Amino acid sequence: MEKITLLGQKPTRHGFGHGLVELGEKYDNVVVLGGDITGSVMTSFFKDRFPDRFFSIGIAEQNATTIAAGMALSGKIAFFSSYSAFAAFRNSDQLRISVCYNEANVKIGGGHSGITVGPDGATHQSLEEVSLLRALPNMTLVVPCDYQEAKKATIALGEMDGPAYIRFGRSAVPMFTTENTPFEIGKAQILREGADVAIVAAGLLVWQALLAAEQLEKKHGISARVINNSSIKPIDVETLTKAAMDCGGIVTAEEHQVYGGLGAAVAEVVVKNYPVPMEFVGVKDTFGCSGEPDDLLVKFGLSWKEIYASALKIIERREKKFIGFRKLTDIAAYSEDM
Amino acid sequence: MKDKNMGINIEFVEKIFENRRRIPEEFTEIALELRRDIIKSLTLAKSGHSGGPLGIADVMSVLFFGGYMRYKPKEPDWAGRDRFVLSAGHMAPVLYSSLARAGFFPIDELATLRKYGSRLQGHPGLEVNLPGIETASGSLGQGVSIAVGMAMSDKLIDKTDRKIFCISGDGEMQEGASWEAAMAAANFKLDNLCWIVDNNDCQIDGRVKDVMNIYPLDKKFESFNFDVINIDGHDFNQIISGLDQFTKAHKAGTGKPTCIIAKTFMGRGVSFMNNQFGWHGIPPNELQAEQALDELR
Image 1 (cartoon, each protein chain N blue to C red):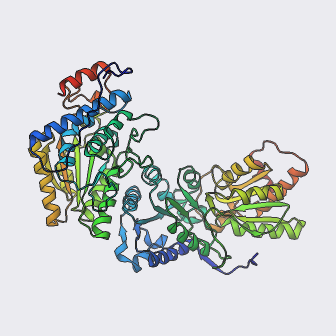
Image 2: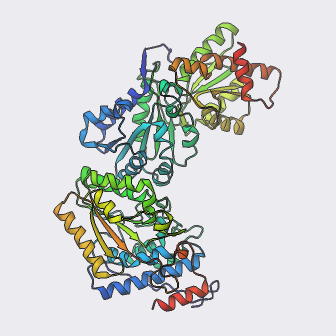
Image 3: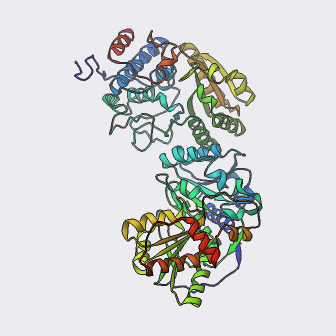
């Protein structure tokens, strides 16, 4: 296992932008559609490099999505990128029929996702799209954890056939995977070995999971297995089931609503294959609000502290051999006690 | 042959039409056959949309069998083909009949419309691999945009002379997404796109102008920078002339998309369905089917 070190800070959207340019160099049927915010979602890199294969559709996400489908049905690998708030919700009917039912080779880059959009506030803080997207048949969904993974995922999605969505964020986040870190659609990676509890995370919460694991080890001698579950659909049933069997409890962590997101996806696998206690770190059925990203992560309970507390909770539940019905608010209360 | 289930005489006569220019008398015969297919398949399906398909049958006859569209029925994915998108997906029965009569698949298959295991889904889909279907449609306002994407791909990227034909409903123009598609078609100067609006002024709840007025349609499309052609969608000479104008504009490279507004009557050809919006989304029962087939001789 590669030793994990902090390599700096960079936004995942840059990984998407650079991945697109690499795809463009490699395949001349890659086309990109813009929705007016090309400089924000970094499709501007592609636009500058391949102006003939870039098309500005304006502020019309429904149209861009269906035009992408039409191009895909004409043999193109068609990317469209906008903020997740508009690239998954405004166009969800188009994603369902024209993209997914058609099995069209359309790739959506959902940018500025999650609470860390910050000052823009609730309208732009998409926290529900994982739930929506993973319910769509034929859809592939990846939530990369850092710059390098976003770049690798973008290229991998371009090279696979069929509908896909990559969810990335706005702010600079820790870089800790390298060019050599493996990435495969449908595979989760174990970033840290452990046998007492497993932490399954996606996006920027993966780094927080690593921090939590360190603290668990240092303060309690608890060895936590940290899994980067960037490929949410298809999901890595084998790695997750093995984590349940080896560790006997799982904490999930995501910058997304706890309803229907990564946590739910992991729970579906665990409940079916090897039920163990689970705790869910995520946004608890509320909208976001304006603020600086770091403050919002604390306010909405999306840091290593909540992961750490949830891991202890799992161990406590297991020791009491108690698996009962509990409210999400209990977890919040527990976090506050710390 | 008496069909046990229906108690009426339903037989799909094996007859394939050629794709070449014809005289109006020949289109009359083709359109009659399409209308008979529509009645028969809907009667057997016991559900589906009667009015729209009957109303657009004359336009479909000229489009598919008048030599305006290039296609090879035995090679549906032929790269040189022109493409057809039925944005108003609920009018599928007339598309299925046209494709079968053109030789894309066996005519008998029309009897499976809307049934479990059939390639003739209630609204067109790609999953079932029915030859000749270019995209799923049925959620209104999407097919027109798909057609724009196809036209962009052909004209701006592949630089081919392929043409894209698309039929939308008039009620479909109430969908905002339809106008997003129109905006992009003109923006990208898609003179390879022929957008036909089936203007029967009927939708489920009533007259289009009463449910939500979309008129004047021609002025709207003109202001969106389309070449607009108003035709009587039941007059073969006018349909021919409209499609000729589009073909000419495409060859000349006018840099403007064409919109043909075809004034039609929902349920045309069957006296008790003609211009009755109540026939939008229902099939004829056995008695009504017998009478309809009687009239369509």
